[in-house]
Image (tube, rainbow, N blue to C red; front, top):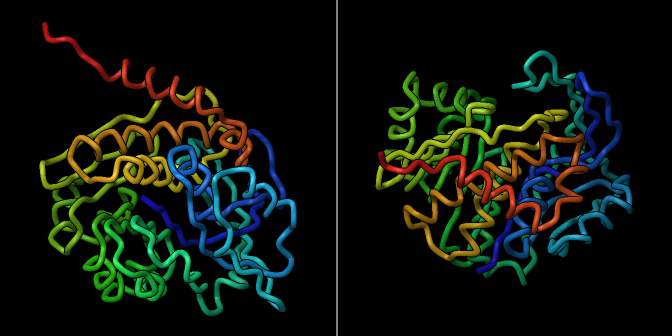
Amino acid sequence: MSLLVTGSIGIDTVTSPFGRAENVLGGSAVYFSFAASYYVPVRLVGVVGEDFPADFRDLLGTRRIDTSGLEIRKGSRTFRWTGKFEGDMNEAQTVEVDLNVLAERGPRVPSQFADSSTVFLANTHPTLQRELLSQLHSPKMVVCDTMNLWITTEHESLLETFRKVDGVILNDGEARQLTRRTNLIDAAEAIRELGPKFVVIKKGEHGALMVGIDGPVALPAFPTREVRDPTGAGDSFAGGFLGYLCSQGNMSHETLKMGLLRGTVAASFTIEDFSLRRIERLSKDELESRVEKYTRMLRFDAA
């Protein structure tokens, strides 16, 4: 099966209690692609400005990421985000954001990508998500992400997008904001009633909850000692989750559960260093070793 992702590709500057990384590669589609590429090749669709560094594109080329859908738009500048983490580092504080090319028309899907079977619509305007989806033939699995801004300002458009997808990934605050339900299982069920077959709610350091046709599944976060930069953790989670699902070619309850586990492990690596530094040097053996360790941690023998 083929996996396509569309979302932001940017240049980040991040500060945390552990240091500062300036002008590093970031963006939702980038973190997703790196995590997913451990399981399947990824088709990347996005747009950057002519200031996008050549070495960033070279870095994307070190993984199984097809950048045929990466448009370098002349006369435009790349999306830039500056943020910081403080305290428990559960939530980023945006210091400055320059939408630049993201405020222009969306990217086009190359004709050779139109047959993609699995699609992840990373966080962007819900209308743009549907426009991209309309350029694909007949994907078998479509999952989207969203954010509090669209819940507030584009509520009806967001619900229209939800009616066209198989799964939704969002965080706990967004789920409560969207549904006005305090209990997260109730919130997930309310979102499922809008159309998606399954809903994944990210809970940061408290793990993730998934509710599908066969009921809820909850996993804790992997206990990580080094938390230096949580930027991209949610998108890495989505990449591990969708990459595994795509490699299995189905959305069975057991596959979704294992995808949840794989996504959790992917996020646990991303947060250990700034930008892509940790997941960039991650080996497949190291990834599988942590998956096995995490699986053992979760296993209980009946008394």
